[in-house]
Image 1 (cartoon, one colour):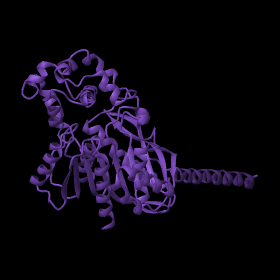
Image 2 (cartoon, one colour):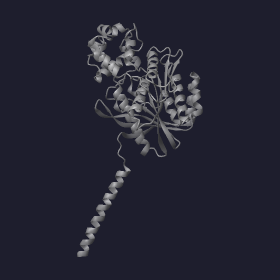
Image 3 (tube, rainbow, N blue to C red):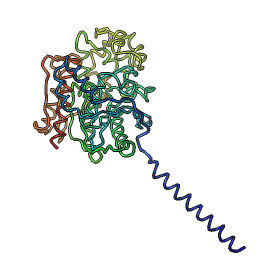
Image 4 (cartoon, rainbow, N blue to C red):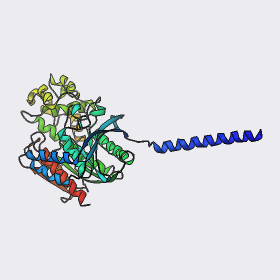
Length: 411
């Protein structure tokens, strides 16, 4: 009887100990992620297809052909969901991660795309779009390529997009990079993420790229080793951008102006009511235009290119000095990117004939960076002759890709 009780106790202890071991093994097998939530395959791109894509693009833009010899592998494109914080609320955001099919060690290239108003055209919603595929193919050059939707698109389409609002934009991009680290550690067998980061972007993406460059260098250097960045046609000084928009008789892209007003209102950047800035019926109409459904052209058609019709006359007269508009001036300044002494290679590009974002934006930030102590050997500027905003995209991005790839191969 005593032996029977002994064996029952022993069996119970073994069972408890076994359960503990199994529990610990499960915890080890299922990592807890800070940012990464999920992934799914969105697209497969073969090396042959990518070569044909470059050949087709080269017919209209011969400079694209310079990328073809650098293509080395197939690419798998994933849609990922990750956690970030916007307006003090944790949300799920989304984007694309493009990975070489060949196992190996790869650095990260983060691409920040330009202005978009349609959720269906966000990267994770339309990965097969030609313009996104031209970025996805960079993975075949030997990078893990990250393309954020930005908050307000994809998984987070239910919230307003914080257009040119710096804090949530940079926060979401940094959290996306953290999520990709976690993804590579546990979810991509054979792929080893190297702690080297390259940044590329155009227009809104040029602004976001420079803001991210500054953040990675000054605030997150212990987590991310930034190697260099290429920024195209960014509105780095948003005060000057708005000034250029309204100090003319007509502005061809009122969608940009309305986007700023809508986002800065939604995220409490302005304390002024919209009617202080826009005339009716546009003041009332503006919040219904940026819901992820209308294209830029359709929004332009709901506004007007005539500045005196679009903008409140009091704002036109007092924007630069009237105390009534101090919240507007402060917000534009706070979300601009102040020049600083960077120690990381930086290429700034802009079309000389850009009427959407004045090339003075690039001229000024370049001058400011040099005056802040940045070496001209590290920071360079290219003004593309005759290129307008749309026409500058391809030459700027090709020069940017080659610039970053030179940095990578020289390491």
